[in-house]
Length: 596
Image 1 (spheres, helix red, strand yellow):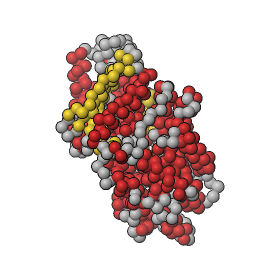
Image 2: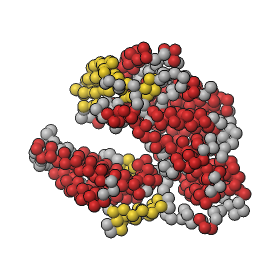
Image 3: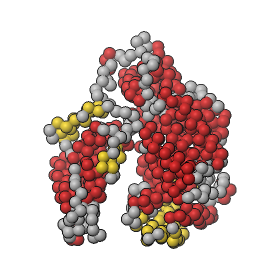
Image 4: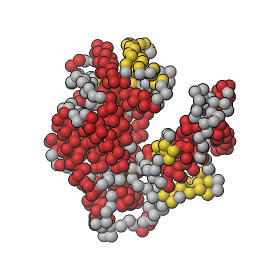
């Protein structure tokens, strides 16, 4: 019986872990507890009988007062916490709250040090699970939770490596490996570091480094085995091992590993999607759809990031219209071969114009990301498409490839042959910007965020400090004198009001109102960036760097949101590829050439 059908016979309890409220001036403490919260979620998700909402959906919830967001989670219980950093002590408060009536089921306070943090994590997990045991069928718990005892530095290196790995590029894979190897240098028996190494090779498989295919495949397999040798209950490593067996053609071993890993953890949404993709290759496409729907349930605020998976799964269960509908909500750059899957769906509907449209987009992406020039382009693209999608019994990609092969010229019909010839561009033209992406052209009125995006696109992967984008100077001479407390409060309130009004005006498409609001907003920020500095203990609004970081982040994200209204695919691409903060960068998964 498929695992999710078996699990559906019981009533799971759903919990959501909200971000810890960290009161500390040290960025290290804040980053550590961000990873700590994610780790709590991952560890809770190991208990069968508990459904755990993804941290991606809970990350932006500040506290339990945000009723609408809390209700959308549909969680039975909430876990909330706060941290006060005093000298070397961490004063940690944590509560387990029943969502239905907001009653506190469990509450505890702990004084810990950084070095005792991991032991505290074990204690909290065991305490809360013991409270919930009355509501969980104890027989459903497949295995007890046991956390590896590791030094803090090892854990920090692992957290940083996993954070970098989520960027999903070949460069981020290499950078993440450096942190995993640093963890192993301190503790050679830390299994999660080997799991991280295995995942770093896994990322290569999907579309990049075609010339290192065997090396990547063997690397993922090797490090997954090493992780499991140290910790046989490492569900992530087991899932990666299962997929490596799929590519090796050892399908029985693959299914054994995949189903075992799924039983170990049915709540980690990233893991669910990795496993479901491999199950689809093995012929369990309907089960892949069910797992995809479960992932959406566990991550309700970011379900759009899963639409690409759903599009492929629905293709394989012959629901071609749903497959195409989901593809229209997905950035075609999500995977190099994604447009080919869309083309396969259109073939089944005898829509040959769209078939060729998306096939040609696939060819362009393959040429940009994979093609070495050793074989004819389309011959190489056809071969690669089937090798990186190792279906046990074939798929709808097979008739697509046969159709392409039978065409005499292996080319696109003349009436749509130029469909991918329009280059991507992001060009200022007076008060407007002319923007082209994936053959769709839009014209938008100037906002300052477009200047920032323009700089990032010009030098992919380069880190730009927020001050460089803000074109602000650090002024430490007047940071405690320029603005008094009353002015501080007025400025902060006005900025918040303007941000809310701009967001509302954008949703209502009130163009004239948006322009006036933006001018006022940017005038205030310009004034603050000139008035505020870094020195002094009684900063009135914040440092130059902090204000620049906040201003640049907001105006870039606001500009991307404006783009998404007119060009959803470009908006999604930029949301995924542009990072903001103290340092900003454009890191596309697949190289895009831009005319600027």
